[in-house]
Image (cartoon, helix red, strand yellow):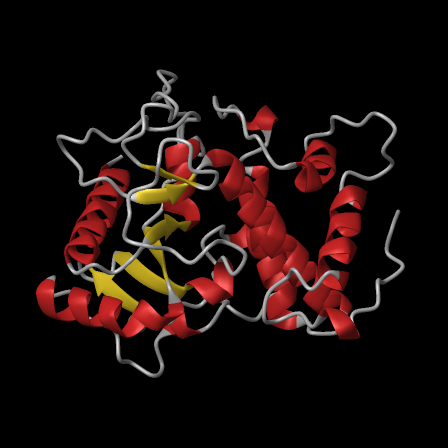
Length: 291
Ligand SMILES: [Zn+2]
């Protein structure tokens, strides 16, 4: 668990520096998932920053925190596929860390063992109200802090060899860690379903390779939050996501394919122009891919 502790400390430090500099920030990605109950240990720390605050975020972390910003034009991190040369179907078998959303800026830390990524909000969370520096209110519909006592407790089950234990690490102690802003479990689930719909829509519009791979990534990540995965926290999604989420969790006995409700959600969101800057709803034609 040393990796997880380092990742959590790094995330806490990043949030501290950015909060001090009044740069809004939100932890996303695998580490944020580990806080709401998926225990995939990750050496990637992903933050989302409002687009217009990205230069300030990079400057703060490079100059105040002294993190080495990567300037290598040939860095492997600049490609969505860290391995390359295999089809999307094989990607997750090879390594869950293989595919990632390329960041606007990244830092290699601890001799390259850990990667800190900064993503513009428009690329991952365009639907979320623009992040601010304010701490989330107790009833905030989207956000919470890593120190929130509603987060799940650490599982007492020992890990099998090579398999991370299930159950979250529990709320981070405010004594040990600076509070880090995250999406609440329901909003994180919605964020992954929205990204899945976006990249499935891009596939349907003929944008193949990156969309194919990212769709696999969002599928894998959302599957780690399924209720059957041993996560001890319920995900309350809004009504428009409920059918898709119930389908994926196999709660609809009449459904012929668990992905059909996701496909319907993809088409509704694409046609309503809700899938962000990469999907033009006026050019979207729903494909005939229901099973
Ligand atoms: Zn790099």
